[in-house]
Length: 305
Length: 305
View 1 (cartoon, rainbow over the protein chains, first blue to last red):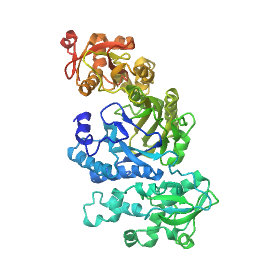
View 2 (cartoon, rainbow over the protein chains, first blue to last red):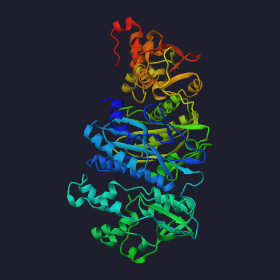
View 3 (cartoon, rainbow over the protein chains, first blue to last red):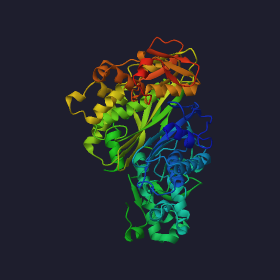
View 4 (cartoon, each protein chain N blue to C red):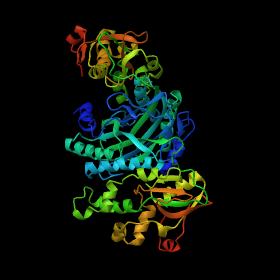
């Protein structure tokens, strides 16, 4: 199958690639052409996912697609942006019709949910599966949530449970396609479909002083806010929310380890003088890094990284 | 070396990643943030280049970088757009300081030449070298050169010599790092640095009725204009310009074969009622595909693809 045929058959379908008020020209020319209203700014972010590095090669193609688009859209959530469209660079070892059909359905599922159509990209043949997605979103001028605005005295919040991504990994690695019934649980669902907190983030515009999405582990990511904002953060580890599923599977101590350093959560962490939404887990202080307050955790052998 | 350190050391340097009037926020947050003036539209295009598919793995890293950015920028030229910045997704088997230093210098060389800074991206570790670049450019509203406007009666033009990209390939495959003096010639220089026709394309705005860049071979690419514009094209093969270096190396017949179907030229092909710039190589007629007029070529065994 030629590249053009493959694109037309699997990617240029109405439920995956449609035009909206921001897209003047989509798939099929040398470039896509976008209209950005003068009161808005464009936010862009790119993520690359490689087989057996960022997802198991034997995962279902539908699940690979939802994970790839979710984790990239999460960067738009981190800025408080509304998705307008994405581009896809995909390198395939072979053009397997069934695989491509399921993969494009996974993309379409998320594209529909977040109203973020496919606008263009590149399809290539290569020895391994590599997926690069760039997402494009808009935010009112000057309203983007960045990492650099945290102030001493602010509180630190997270948007939801931490640790499910890290806790899912051993299960997913043991049974990538979730063939065993016991592998299908809230944790593995979260791993393959870590829904980006787009709407939640928009409620933080004008409220949060700094924001990011937690992809590498809460402590490591909060350290980015410390560095960019020139502050320290005291983290009350005992307040970090954990899902019942995670605690039931691993016990509270291991669950907290996943929550603080596991990664793959794609919840938001943010600072604000005061915020009604979210769970308060700490405070911004003078300093330059995250310190963990709960002593008994450290005594129990907690490892930061 | 951690990802953040690698990005800071090699990619976040002033001569490669600077801000301009379109870039509000660059590398270092969850997204880059762009300002697009209300009278302009944003053009975007993504290309993926894989080792030993799109460039030889053993090519100099500087040359890999210039080629990767040039071929992607060529899509902006095809629309008549002015570059404002690019994003880079790079998958590396290892973090070799010397390789990364030379690669980032190659990127900086082209970024400076086309005033197109690096704004963000993703750096990952994987078994093979994969480079995905997305370029971003602006064009006055409604002025983008597309593939769909060719009219019966228009003439067909190219912006420069055809075939050098195809003619370079055997030399580059035999000596990827150009270690032998005889490998360094105009053709191999063109292969690694196929300068995108950005300025030339801007002279075509308001003049050309359809335009694209020639990456897959003149005949195949002109067929895209035929399909998108609903026209046919008669190509006067004898008028297709060939470089002296190409003809000297291969003889006129083989040179023309490269020119018509070799690919990797990154010159522009366009249609216009009349155009002062460029070389006229044919005319737009009723129909739906390219036909080649010079009978003796076909008799001599010319293969379309």
